[in-house]
Amino acid sequence: MVKINTTSLTLDNYVGNEQIKSIITDNIEVCKKKGSAFPHTLIYGQSGTGKTTLALAIAQSMNVHIEEVNCGTPGLNPAITLIKLPNRSILFLDEIHSLSMSIIESMLYRFMEEGVIFLRYPDGRVEPFDVGRDITIMGATTEPDKLPTPLINRFTLNLKLQPYTHEEMIEILKLNLSKTLDITPSAYTALANATRYIPRHAVQYSNIIRNYAIQYDLKTIDEVTMVKALNGMGIDKYGLDTTD
Image (cartoon, rainbow, N blue to C red; front, side, top):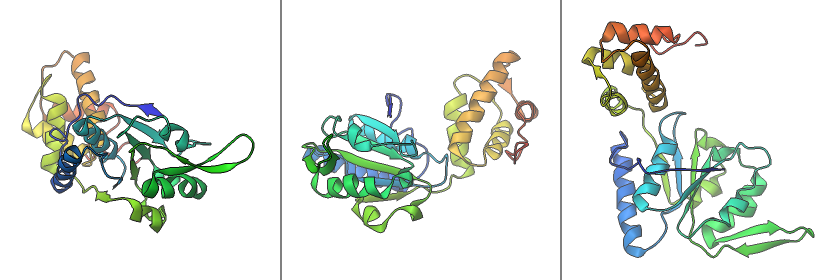
């Protein structure tokens, strides 16, 4: 379970997936007018493409609490977290495909339709419990095919993140680097290619380049220096390391 600070995350500085952002913006406007929680949402795409970041941006735009649960955690029971959340919060279930069918059936099915979950009491009783609050279930997965169809059908929004373009990756890199370093266009191109157009790599590699610049007292980085910095971390110009 992770409590998340969403202060710096908004849909405005979330790069890429413009159609999805438009869908989300429309839903946020409706929710604010109705005074309701954001609709139950499934976000899927390959690892590192910004699923968690998008969830955080939605929470910030809605000005609501968000709590993350990694569904791959052994012995996890998300219901315990759910019943503690304030009204209109988002329960973000990362790796939702890892949930057991017993939890999906006892918690998610009824809650997403009726706001009710089943709880097991110390004396062995299993009874329905009305949560009494409007909570958004937001799931993220790299493997939507592992989710049962009845669960997928309970999500109002199914958002598939699209691959990032070269230009979008450059934009992400500039958001991470332009305030502290002067980087030439060809150096940005080399770094973008090395990320393999995965936003998580962009953030990780940006940290590497900042540290490299600090180590060698650099204010400007050209293509040669960029490739040298990446090679020093065992990353070639194609973004491959020794394991790859």
